[in-house]
Length: 406
Image (cartoon, one colour):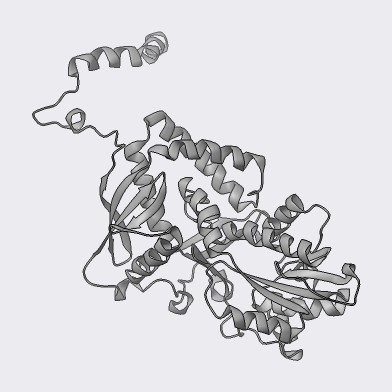
C-alpha cells in the first residue's frame, strides 16, 4: 500500500472505503466539514466494472488528499468466492451473498491501508439501517481493534434526495439522479439493486434495473449447454477448457446472463431486524452453485451430505452477518474442505430463456451404482433383505401403535 506524505498529524487522517457513488462521494466533503480530517480514498476492485482510474481521480477532485485503487479480483475469487461456493452459501436459500462476500475483503484492505498510511480513523459510506455497516465494522474491529470508525451516512440527517442536493451544492459529481435513484452494488459474483420504485414489493422491477441479464423474452430461441468441471469442489474448466476461477466466473456470467438466467426478487430479513425488498442478478453464482450441489449429490455419502446441509445454512448466515473473520468460520472451512476432496467431475447445464437445468453429471468419485439403482435386468439390490429391514426400521412405531392406536 502506498505511503501518504502530510505535514499534519496522523490523527487527522481517515481512510475511506470509496466507491465513487453518492454516499462515499458526499462523505469526503462531509468529513472535511464535520471532523476536519484528511481523507485517503481507497477503491477496491472486486469486479464492479467501470473506469476505476476515473473513480480514483474523482476522489481527488472531490477533496481526498490521496486516492488509490486496489485490484483484488483474483483474491476475491479464490479466497472468498471459492469457499462460499464449496459451502453452497445462499442466505435464506436464495441470495448468493455477492455484496456480503466482498465486504470483509474490502474492510481488510482498508485496515492494511490505514496501517500503511498511519491513519487511526476509518470510514465507510453505509447507512444505519443496512447490513454493510455491520460487515465493515465487525471486520475492522476484528483485524484492528484500535482503529476508530466513522460512519458519515449514519450520522448525517440526509435522505437520499437531500444527499443528492448536497452533492449538487458542493459540485460533487454523482452517478444517480432523482429520475434514476437505484442504489447499486456490483462485483464478479453478482449485483444488488435497491431503492426507488423497487421499495414497493408489489411492483415488478423495471427493465432498466437489470444489466447483467437479458430479458428472458429476448433470450435466444435455442438452448445453450455448458459443461462445468470441478476439482475438489471448485470449478476448473468450462466446456473442456481449463481456466482460472476468475476467468470462468466471467464467462459463465456472460453466457448465463445472455440466456436470461440469474435474476432474484426476494423479501429479505436484514440483520438489523427489518424486512427489505431486494433485487439481485447473479448468473454465474446461481449456475455454478446449482452445478456444485448436483455433483455433491453424486459424490457425498448420505449422512455426510445431510449434515452438510445444516452447515451450509450457518455458513451463509455468518457471511451475511459479517462474521467472516471468526474462529467458527475457520472451523467450518476445515469441515467443508474435507467433504470436497471427492467433489470431482463434470456437470452439464442447459440454459434457456431464463431457466437453468442440470441435464447430465459424471464423476470418478460417483457413488451412483446403476446396477443397484436399475429396475431392469442386472439389478443387484437384495430385495429379499428389504422385508426384514422394513420390520426392524419401523419396530418402534409398530410397538407404539399397538399400545396407543385403537
